[in-house]
Length: 320
Image (tube, rainbow, N blue to C red; front, side):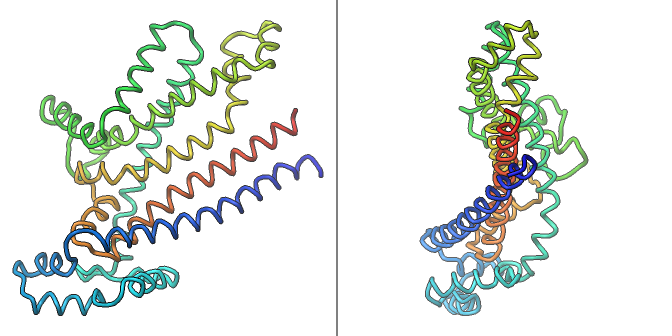
């Protein structure tokens, strides 16, 4: 096969395989979400009647159950929702009565903005810290990076959000804490999303680069008199790129999933906030749409990164 076609074919095979895996993952996520909501404590009709009218009667609850189809068997309700998704009908919110597609459309932009900011924080800080830790033997540099990573990973995201609010908003009054008010309102939620993911990426990057730096071709480059910085950035890093790309894809997908916590903590009007509200009222159609949107984003990010990694691997093989 010609050189140019080999890595293209590799990318095509990887993309096809990952697309199939992604569809399977989304079906499993949809089924699990419906199953957990079905067995969860509390009654959706009661919660919705209470939200709408403030008081609950048996007759009103029975009427709402019939309106929403909650009196139908669970498999029938799941298939109705799945059929609607496949035909582009996301249904209507039982709580608000509004079309789910319209509600999701108004919230998608803020979530994409927040997830992108969080992913940028994670990738820039994580790769930078990992490369720095791998490229030095000085404990004064490596130790703070490792301790900082462990510290960030040991703190729950919601606790990190509350700490940020306490210090930067209430104590020092530097940043806003609720809603969207220009770029300053993006700083805290993006940091809450990005810092723990940066810690993961830093650890993986350091470990991968240290492993690559022990390879024979790196020893050869050093023997030729190549500078340590060039060995790290021009020799080791490109050869570690493929597995790191997969991790970066996971980080981007995780940033999207982490918006659920950040949006709830900071009153950010996005998909994550919408998901939590739907969960509170057992509102199936909004919950299904929100969960699947987050899952689609995460699966797509990982799939794209995996396909790029396959291309990098194939081209590296061609060059060698």
